[in-house]
Figure 1 (cartoon, rainbow, N blue to C red):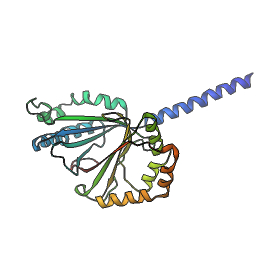
Figure 2: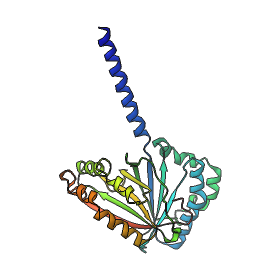
Figure 3: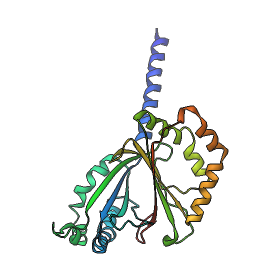
Length: 261
């Protein structure tokens, strides 16, 4: 009887340890906020960038966010210009509470006054698109690009993979994580900043990732290696991963001079 009781207790202990281990791993995955500023005029661009450089990024650093990314499209759409802002958060609470904390930061309010107190007749942007993401288990936190080129010469690639259904979405997530797609990207030095699942945004189910290169030819060379890799040819041929992407957006970006990434 005692042996059976001890066995039950041991089983409960093992279960709890495994559960706690899984919880810690889940809690360690970052959340990302990707804001896309849509604007039309150079004056709006100047006001947005002044706010980001002198108010937003310093304030986020004070809140413990080590690195904030600001990126501009390589190809400019004059009818709908954009600036992309990536803010990584270690926990959901940090993401949720950041706006309230910013409004209590007097230095932030002063530095961003022209943007924050803009008149409705003279808006600094047309609209903001906000996407909330959660890091993949295969890359639970962001990474700094390990590049040799100067920022003006670099090319960053933001990819968005929409999936036909929630089930196909799970398939594509598995392909990246357990399937080994992230492992191959790492092996070939794609210098990813993040891989993440879209939790909320205008397009779901969806996942996004950001890889970085010294130049456009460098990007093309990396993708040739990837597409020619035996690991990729094997992975993409598996039945469980067929037809799991319905639409791809491929956006080429330059980092702003003041961007942390």
